[in-house]
Amino acid sequence: MILDLRPATPSHIIETELGNVQQTAARPEGLPEDLLRQAARRLGIICLVATGVWIANLLLVHFVYAVPGTVSPEHVAAYRQRLAVYDWVGGFNVLLSLGLFWYTRSTRQNPRRVLDLALGYEVLLALSVGVLDYAEGGPVEGVSWIAVIILLFASVVASTPQKTLVTALLAASMGPVGALIWQAAGAEVPGFRQVLLLSIPNYLCAGLAAVISHIITRLGREVTKAREMGSYVLGELIARGGMGDVWQATHRLLVRPAAIKLIRPEVLGAGTPEQVRVLVGRFKREARAAAALRSPHTIQLHDFGVASDGTFYYVMELLNGMDLQTLVSRFGPLPPARSIHILQQVCESLGEAHDRGLVHRDIKPANIQVCRMGRECDFVKVLDFGLVKSRPPAGSQELELTAPNLICGTPAYLSPEVGLGEPVDHRTDIYSLGCVAYWMLTGRQVFQAQSIMQMIVQHVQAVPDPPSRYSPFPIPALLDQLVLACLAKRPSERPSSAWELGDRLAECDVPSPWTRHDARSWWETRLEPEPMVVLGD
Image: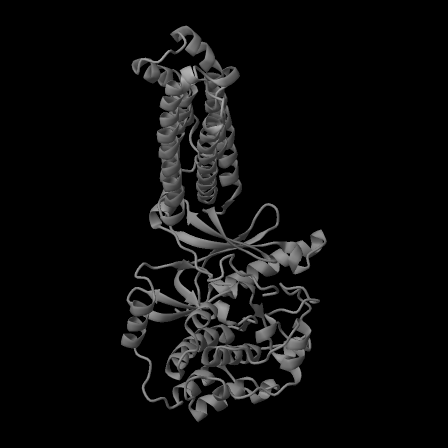
């Protein structure tokens, strides 16, 4: 890769429910899942604001009562009665608003269900306002806060126009209901005709709410249509980076969850139409080559294509687990036996790719996923084979998928030849894998630097310390030497292939190998029982 494409969350963990994915695919006329989630979060903000408004209202009415001379002696008894109503209604709404806010933040409910609850919340808020309006004889100056509530919820709560209209009409009717409640309690309220006249603005806002909902729903359909990539429909945005975005996606017919990576052509150096045309041809050839990889330790590429705006997209499988960057950052360095177990699987993936003439060029912890595959734990998947580079024939002038004036890779895992701008082959992946091994064993990068340029210079010139110096575990001498061999400055001094590296890893003597039982026990005791859908860098 050219740039480090990281998910927005620090842990790189994306959680989802298959039911949500199925609902998105089965309801194409609705809003995309990520927009629904955003609406649910905005509902939580409304709940907090409502809590503050109700508390302020309670303090205000008590402050007015406390000011001498504000309430005449003959009205003190009636005012005390209204004050008790304010306390009960205000207290109820504070608890209701806080409860719904907690629900929107602390549960994994489908956002559609949360927004349906919001419609009931709208009606209860309107009823509370209606009761308080007629505690004073009617809305002040003939305008009720019910109208504001109706318009606010129509704009924030994404729902169908029919459901929005029914809810808004119910909310608009809460003014007359409030008047009936006070009439039943024996209080003096305006006549029914006057109550209906005072409610006209609310009913007008109810009709406007249906129009607003129709506009939002139509825009949602347009967004959904615009997000279609081949046979897949884009759902929630799960990563954003310099090269492009990564989206959760669903196959329209199979309802199969996947991940789509969108790559903007301009970041690959394509400026003119001719460069774009050549780049598209190269992209298709490279994608076919990556899709032909069959190692179980290589992430599967389901589909690829070019959108109408020239954006490249890859459709990949979603994985359950976490990448090595997260694993080591969260749980610390790995023991030698487990590190060898993981590295051997990476070698299986790279060995096949190298045999087919493909060089990954961005091997790093964030691109190595440690997964749960059925009952298999610590099952490794190598990611981001979408921007691999084929070794061109001698003398070929074919345009590369990546721009020639850009350094490809991640600085902390960059081979010396890449840093110097020299031709690369499969041994650049061997060097990067050595850096990954160093990270797993020590929890630190091979070199420490304050800038990208300093890091590149270190890889080109500096001699690395053996990982045994920093690892909390005793490192076998052969493993220590093998990691340093991978980090040799000259490609000719590194292991000649990923297959050779895998064989030499098997020769490293560890007290006991990492077994399936060890892996399963580790995952069951340290991680939540529910699988987490994740997507690597």
